[in-house]
Length: 402
Image (cartoon, rainbow, N blue to C red):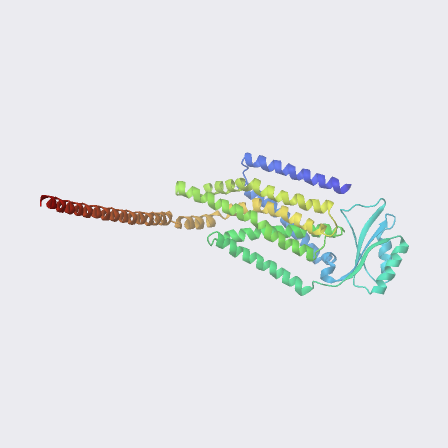
């Protein structure tokens, strides 16, 4: 029942934010004007996440969050009555010189007066695992799942995944820079937003993982979610950048010159024009992901949670990080954009049009010449016929006289 209530609350929250988004667009929210305050607020919570992540690494607590697919081990999921505490389970494992990590399974229907927990340990032999399971059953636990998992993703694979992430970020810088006329600042700004998204995802996972909740661990599923968000969240940023360039091009055609203050207005208008589209697309995806989180199975739950956090932070970074950073770096960006846009000579388009018209005109002249020549030939034929008829008529007259 609690899952349905949480899902309803999140859906209500989504519709509320959608209403606020439409209202912000109608009132033309001044995002760029308040960009220093917005970026200051984002920097504060971004720094908090970084401190939490650094603390988990330095204290060694992040090791408890590493999935078994990274480090290998034995995973046992059991259901116990609430009168059995964690210390009793730890004491049972200590008889076998094993230090277990115990986490509660959240976001699933719990039986009355019972709770489900996950116990992670170092790799155990099959006989030892079976002995411990029998001890747990004697204690009153119901064994839901117990399996040995090898380290399918080792240290080398983890390093390769990080290298792949770095290469993806570099490739996006290059692609976005080429897409926007060799202006590398657009690519750097987009990557800053992506780093924010990944940091928020990892920070949320570290907070929930250190709180003892099961499912919030750094494993292959989490890495897949990170790479998915890196590819997805940059789309909204590119759309905003593209709208900025289009509005700038229109302004240059109308007024020839664009001041820095006017460029801020263009950026703000571009964000407002794409605001509803970006937010509604994001919330459509979030509704589906929240359905999986609260109403779906346990298999995809951790992946859906990671994508939900990354998708939401990606929408925020496109609007409240990428656009304000364009405004802050406008002196470098605007001069480059104006240079590129003014180099796109409209005369080339006119010349092409003129050339096409000349081709058609030439074809028309050829047709006219052909038509004139045909008419001349027809007139010559007519003249020849007249001469012939006149000649025959004169012969006929002479014969009659004779």
